[in-house]
Figure: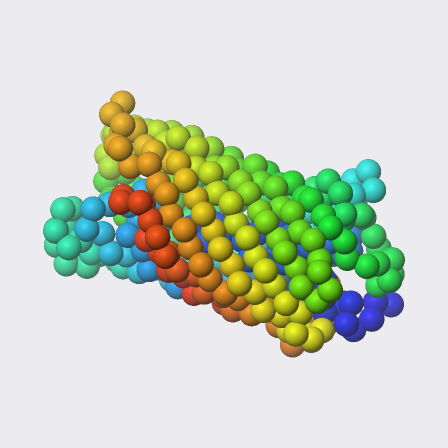
Length: 301
């Protein structure tokens, strides 16, 4: 049997997560878990931003508030002695949008619906061996490197005649690397990724949207308070993602930095959660300006 403290530790960690709509990784999302573990997560995100929910492309004068809900299932397993996982994420969002300059419409518009589904495959490169629950109970965490590939599928609600959509009507592939190393009760984690965008041939009607890759790097410094509680400081920097509409470059290369903090907790060995906040502290003109509150609840078995 796995001890209560060890079960709490891996219940608070997973192999990778980027909740689908404009939210970065959380601290300790990449740490090792036992194999044959099922993980079910529910998220509530409160997002205030100057971008539509379906893209990271700011629109001049836009103010958007969104309640974003995510349901996520993950299962871990071993491949060639290393830990791996497959994950499925389904977002749903309710949004309210207005324009300061009435560029697209007057007043406030509301929209709600399913977002684009995501499938994620993650595999440990080193530092995350495939362990049974019994083996994991006596294993000591170590420096690790894990790779993942995210596939966003255009299954969400989309209407080409709407300015604000929930789905993005394009495929996205995102390779990612997650590195972490422990220092006593603390963890330093660094994640980096690149988002590769497919085209949207029905952008704002029948226009064609193309977008260059968007690069990001993210850091977390977390401290274990006790076996059921930890806290972290978080930072993210992203750059790139200039877009082209109907063959015309939009001069909207993105560059922004975010700071945040999070608190992870366990209520029982199988059930726990996380509370996190992030806010943009600096951005290039025409880049996303977003702040997000996140509440996550999770159950493992």
